[in-house]
Image 1 (cartoon, one colour):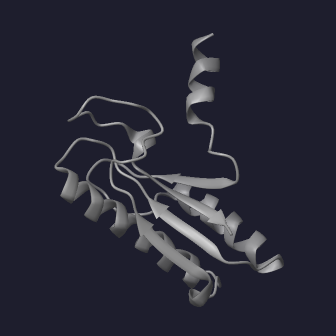
Image 2 (cartoon, rainbow, N blue to C red):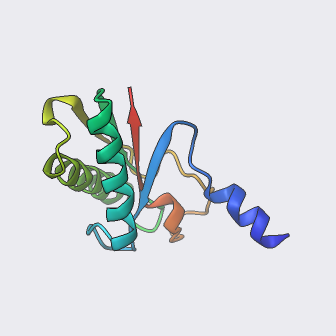
Length: 121
């Protein structure tokens, strides 16, 4: 039963591809690279505008979280551009800690909230 609840919590918002980041890191992990590679391949078969939105957990000051969310979104945009997604089709945004997947108290580290969402528009 616990596994089922965990799967519900980690489900991507409808229409979004998610990649997650370790606390204090902005590098694309091996798992995230595989996800991004698959997205880039699908995009090359059917190009469309892409919105890349970074999010953060609540483990630091709000301003720092907004900066790190934008930095992670830009890193994902760079990765996808290197894989052939046209830069002009990419819009990048950083939401900071404003739209968590998992509600937490201030100061809590939550990996599911340290994410970048990729959506076709």
